[in-house]
Length: 124
Length: 107
Image (cartoon, rainbow over the protein chains, first blue to last red):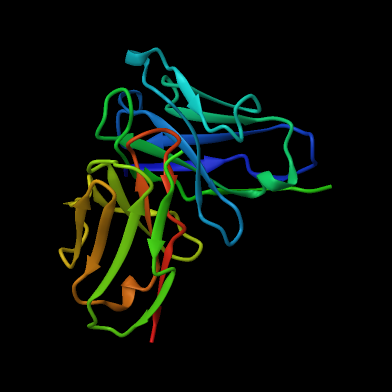
């Protein structure tokens, strides 16, 4: 089955770090850019960043609100993408989604496969 | 950043109705516009890509139109499973941005 499964969410104190994982199956993971989004409770969707394929150097880009705090990486041998989050704040509380980017080479055109999401709650 | 504005933010409709949701971009994004459907507690699902291309497996009652700054998503005959929130999203420039969502509720 073609799917993405996120894990690693939970309750974390402000200022701490957390690493989310996104495990892919059913497709050739290394052929796709992987992107991360989040959705705060009752709010809309926010893009966080992406990592390109090895063909493009596994380079990453980030949204301004998380640049310098969040890092995206990937292990193509394990078909896993990671979102490393540091210096977490209460406003980072959200459901975090990983997605597969399609339609483009250097930049994705759309996101056709989403994980189920994992909830991160930042609270003391 | 490119701002995406959807209207209406919510609407009430009945099964069988024709529903149209509008999305406006703050600058010309050509046809780099996607539509997603989200049900409560679920991940978004891609419906339409590149403004008017139906994603594989999506029913043909969904259609998209537009280019430049103005886009529409139309559901020709609303079905019970279509009551959800719909988001437009631009893929012209990073940061990728979404509209605020349009909630389709049962009348």
